Image 1 (spheres, rainbow, N blue to C red):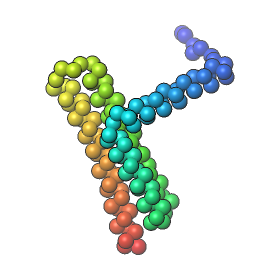
Image 2: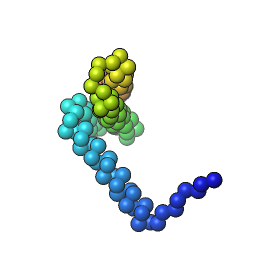
Image 3: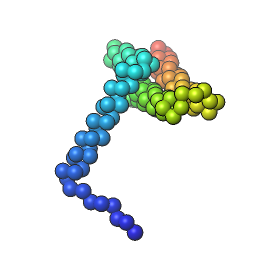
Image 4: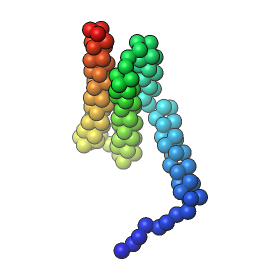
Length: 128
């Protein structure tokens, strides 16, 4: 049985640096190439300003921030799926369309979840 190769602390730090660099490159690429990512980021920033302004509870704030960031994460995955499909083939194919549509639907569902969270928190805040 092959045991995992043990790396020294210097190698581990270099690996961590590389991983962080690639992640930042991915965020940068998505920011530059994907208008929807920039739009969701703008909505997140607006959401954070409103959260501060309304003075919601810590729990409500954490949930709404987490749901907003979830939308960004799903948008990143959607963008990765779209880029992969486009890289594999420029031909129109039903499975390529399905992959892109399903990934887009995931973004929509996460956005609706975030919106529902906002509605529930606002209803509680107005009633309270």
